[in-house]
Image (cartoon, rainbow, N blue to C red; front, side, top):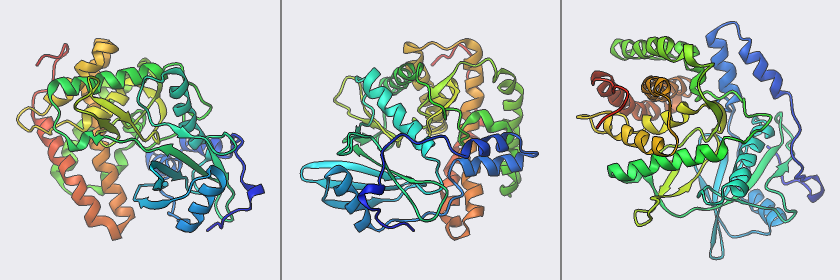
Length: 379
């Protein structure tokens, strides 16, 4: 574990390209889908051992680099070390990347947020706080690990998580239109690492069948195999033709803040950790997947309200809408499969992880059992 560096060793220049490009190429060249999954999981930062800096070290870094001090509260997350910092009457979100994550991937996220700040200030995306040197990132050299760690500070956004609300049809349409505006603002954004490998990216879904090895129940395996088959048949042939750009990648109810009294409804967009270049419909699939099966009597209804709002801002060709029906189910399945896989990798958390995957399987089953929507969608 690293200690607090001397002031002269903290640097804020943009990171240079690193050996991760070789890791990406190696993943693409993997001889089997199982090897591909391992390589993508590593690139996604899901295989790294979590290492924690002492809170006192984080506070020293914040005061030294940002002039901030106050009460630090650690927030449990999947990868980064994340904190809430109370500084006087202001509240900040503090994130520190792991030594296993390429700083260029962090820089991709930072650059995306900066692009929105400059090109689309009307979009309520989370804002970066500059260091005393005027930079959005502070790099922390480490004694162990392949990469510097990256410290970033953001404004803490107030609001209600969409996940904690029961939105109306009109409100779900506003969620969809907000996602469309965000995608439109990012359509001209470019970055050297936008083509990163990300386990959650559905353009790799057809190579994820080996994850079924971690599913013991035949009923679940049969359900999953059917979705893989549909994806291979209806989506894979279109991959080279689908509209593609950099997207948020995780526009889920846990990353969307809402204000029921605002005409825009969506008041905040947080967590740009899954930013990637991929087909646009896969970005919409994330939001849909979180709503599929939430109403078992009409498992597609809530998700289609989001699609309706999205299309009001950014129309999609019928061919992409048909692919969207399959990709939304694939995203929900992928979440369940990754959870099952992680349970096998982390036996000490297996019961906890598997309890969280059960609702996904239940909702997926009710969705698959219902008639699939037909383009053009009707309510």
